[in-house]
Amino acid sequence: RIMASTIGASNVSVTAAQLAQQPNWIVVDNHVLDIAKFASIHPGGAHVFANFRAGANDATAAFFALHTTDVLRKYIPRLRVGVLEGAQANDAPSSRDFVNPVGLAPSERPGYATSPYYNASHAAFRKVVRKFTQTEIRDEALANDVTGKAPSSEMFEKLGAHGYLALRLGPSPVLAAVYPGPLPGGIKASEYDYFHELIVAEELATLGTPGYADGIGGGLSIGLPPVAMFGTDALRRKVLPEVLSGKKKICLAISEAGAGSDVANIGCKAELSEDGRHFVVTGAKKWITNGMFADYFTTAVRTSGPGMGGITLLLIERSEGVSTRLIKSMYSSSAGTAYVLFDHVRVPVENVLGKVGQGFKCIMFNFNHERWVMCATIVAYSRVLL
Ligand SMILES: Cc1cc2nc3c(=O)[nH]c(=O)nc-3n(C[C@H](O)[C@H](O)[C@H](O)COP(=O)(O)OP(=O)(O)OC[C@H]3O[C@@H](n4cnc5c(N)ncnc54)[C@H](O)[C@@H]3O)c2cc1C
Picture 1: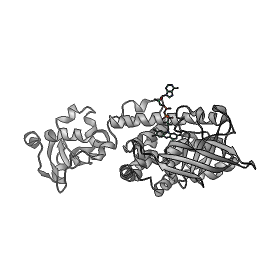
Picture 2: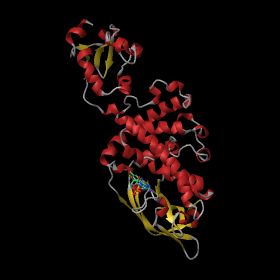
Picture 3: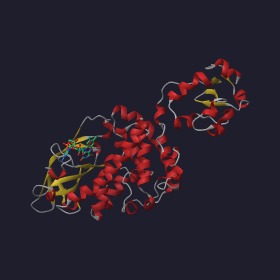
């Protein structure tokens, strides 16, 4: 304590034995801090230091779960009594700051425990999702978000194997049927609710890599539900396991250069072949997330006259006549945002999702999940930025 008050930001080397004798000393990122006076004015209360006094446990992870490097830098001159022997202390701005910024996770905000919307399964689920995100996804996310590289096949298959792609499908009446295995955290598909899905959005946002995060399932979360809900049994049996295992990728192709908000006005044409067995699709789609690496395109096509009644939803497989071109956008190209061109693509009539001429209804139904995911994601990223 004498050292702390007189020396301030000391560089003295502190041994483990010295540390063990000082109940008011804690270690954050190798800085040895004396919290004797500070503990009583700490906004979170003095009790939060209990497990870390005398260096009993390193406080670094707990510190960065709730603070940024700026906070550490602010207190070093006042509290540091030394640096852990043999270690290098670091107070430079760090990517760890994005791990869990202040106020990001409801689990760490007062009131979470009493929220009527969260139960024990949500708290347990968050822990599992956070660990997986930080240990299994983070490295590739940080690298690819900068380079614009698509998420690797290994990543997709890993996400599939651990049930993380199924999570992006959202709570759905068909989830239990199409994904029998337990979801991350041991949750049954029938118990997976929108608050679990909110947690997924929040934890992915902590990576601070929105392009990459959309790359690993953005297309799936909007493109696969129509197959699950409106596809024929045969189509579902083929496509769902392929996509949920990460072996194939899917996207939603609705928007066109002349029809964004105005979905009823899309122009991409699908004409029935003479033998009635195929639709022949010609047209272009714009801003298609994951389009660059998608194997399947859940596509709005015009099968008859103008307006919403002439629209059909069709699952188009990447095949002859399908080409994709990257659209540079404000976020990383690892999202695979594409301009998609269909040039006389032959699509089996069995690939109609729902009924011919009923596509607009299916699209509007599907937008509900997309809107929800967007709201959850935008709020989560806003918290990261704040
Ligand atoms: C990053 C990104 C990813 C995307 N991913 C996909 C994807 O995977 N699949 C896909 O199909 N599409 C995708 N889109 C396209 C997206 O759905 C469209 O951008 C959106 O529907 C809006 O269409 P638009 O850009 O043509 O804008 P417009 O529809 O032209 O709208 C321009 C402006 O006019 C306003 N406006 C439009 N109509 C009205 C009205 N009637 N009254 C008042 N105001 C109005 C809008 O609010 C907006 O501010 C993506 C877009 C982006 C930016």
